Image 1 (cartoon, rainbow over the protein chains, first blue to last red):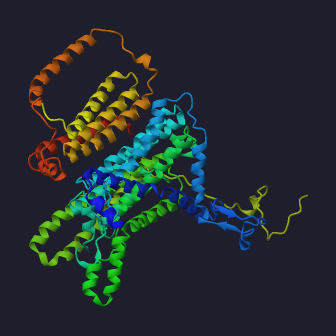
Image 2 (tube, each protein chain N blue to C red; image 1 turned 135 degrees about the horizontal axis):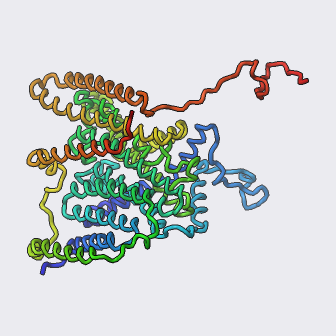
Image 3 (tube, rainbow over the protein chains, first blue to last red; image 1 turned 60 degrees about the vertical axis):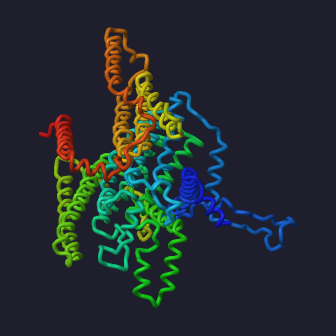
Length: 465
Length: 171
């Protein structure tokens, strides 16, 4: 059966193959969406010391019916711990009335959700989810990660048009905020990914992965060179992570849908299926940015940053184990890919549950005064490193890794300098950059506590005259 | 008459849509619709570049024009909050026929240069490998390095100037 499918696929026309690849990718990103929503609700509940959805999907057997086997009578069977809640939500939204407010710009209003869903589906077309060249990625193009940036920048349209088409001030404000935010954070994001692309000298994700599968820092042969473990890559990953939060409109950057100011932001006027399209787009986007980070910085579909072949030749006594792990890594690559994506999505949710929403000026300050300079300095550093390495390794090839270490130390010093300057500039008086508003809770002294309802169980009850 | 292939049909279809979108930019009297038509036009142009094998050019088109400049256009249009379309209608004046005349002359001039070459083209096809990132990077940093850098300096001057103009007086 499997063999027959493989034969059929490999003998198909290139266009047909591409179609199947696209279908496979859509299944991979579309299928887990309910799981992400469920996981977000569950994880948020755990973090906030709640239970979260757990009732839907409970099968309660009759206590009296004879059709039910005796040992099941009156029993409750909970399946999947509330996961069917998402199916119930979906059903509900699909059977509700599809309401379009009267005063909206109908064409734009209907176009917006469709446009919001287009980029999430298209962005990942060049991300390989497994080491199987005929099945993934959908298109192995030589512009690779640049394509991601291009399509991601189209993400603003859905939100802006939703805001405009709704003919609602709050929605419009949400749309404007979203567009400003997306444009601001795209720059830093492009710079951070650009540093990685510059380092491996290619934009093709598969080639970037091949580079990351090489020895760590070019010298530790047993480990893989995931960019998250290199100094510049760690910085770029942090910048990328923050920008990914902002690009997907997630907390603490969810100003476009800030409830306390804008009702629900750009999707205020949307209901039922159209609102679901926005939601699905957001979750797919989350996953796509997570796996983009995984592919560019965290070794893609590789299970661990370990080079099994090297271990196989150097620790042959455990050859069977290494072989089995390499086999697992090869055949279960999509699962590893999904799992790493899920791990990063858990990070998104964790951030959402722990950080308050930024103020708008703080958002802009963070993007323009912090992330962009840091990412640019990082990028420049990578360029300088490449030049230095080319020149120095040609002259002194025997000291390669020591030179790398030296350059790394210089880089860390420079980086510290840049951050120090940024701090100084943003805290300088007159520029109300990062001035924070704090509320200090003060326990008033006992003499002033009259009239304040502070219950102190140890105190003797006062007799009110 | 060139043989009609699927490739040619695809190219013609996309090119025709792009032209229609370009017409839409001037034909709509709603500023947002016009801007959306321009977005569509830019996007389809990028797709045309893709079909000709210049991926780099196409994606740059999307990143710069579709993704950044048009978003800013829409942003500004929304901020301006133009009133009802009928208020924006211009009254008839001599500028319109004059513009049409000049436009016609321009079409004739450009067409006389371009069309005789274009009718000889049978298939839409780009130069192999000319549109990749490596080729473009090499061209930018070797043959065209001086124009490239001077343009970037020009842009920098523009940015500094606009900041100077927009900055609130700090005193």
